Length: 186
Image (cartoon, rainbow, N blue to C red; front, side, top):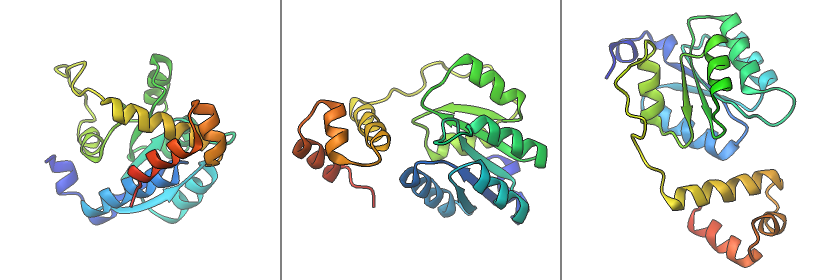
């Protein structure tokens, strides 16, 4: 593991996750807690700004697309203005070259496309200088993962109304309910 992460003083092991998907944020947070991080969650710019005033963060994971008027880029800017030494990784399911460049300009150390797991994010924290030998297709996404992400997006867009999400997905409500039961997050 990277010396920066393994030998960091305790205060720098504090991680801020800015993510409006509460289930994903809690799951990611628990995974990082198992790795020894102290995790704080915020769902928007305002919540993140309050936490940054109260705690000294060494790491942050920011979702690019947040509900509401602020974006993940606003959060990256705020974190960099507050403390440029915070290692910020931006996650998104909507990657584009423009947003990658803008996130890096605003202070992010890395930018990862979803789905990314805790290993990917922690590696990004330790790889702030970048590498030139990264393969362009290092991990394929399964059909089941893509389906689950699509279902989850429809649920979020319909405020977790199963009937409305099923209508948007073009499937019967019971079919959607069965799929959700199989993928229950604990």
